[in-house]
Image 1 (tube, rainbow, N blue to C red):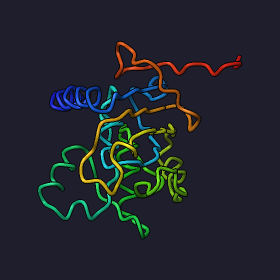
Image 2: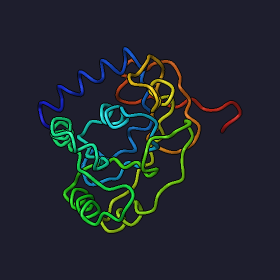
Image 3: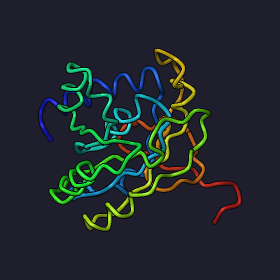
Image 4: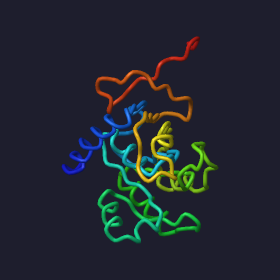
Length: 196
């Protein structure tokens, strides 16, 4: 992990704790090295940062091609390991770039819905993620974001305070419990009443 990435993690973790009361669960399910796909639902503009700040490794992510039209913002997200992909067409170049990064040992964040949710619910998943995982021969770790839509919906210019949780294990119910002392590392989900 590059030094400046560590500094960014420190800054964004402080912001995440202060504004969003971020809780992270199941981080042990994310390999610390080697290629892996993080398949995540998409609730807010800030999702890539929120996912990346909780992991002990750098992540790479796809971004829609139009975001690179602004040269300043485009250069910024390239530094943050983003690369362009077209959402509404078969982007062979983008798929090849995804596979190449995975085969080189990168963690790749993908939003299978293709865009941010309009109502807080998970939208239909687009095809392609399974093919990328198979060709790159890497595992897929599902990631559930809960609460980001409420703090920063797509019709709001800036985010507001709230509580955001991340589950790096399954798309099941996320239990947001008391903040762990080392909140950015790992929080155990509480067992449901009556569960074994």
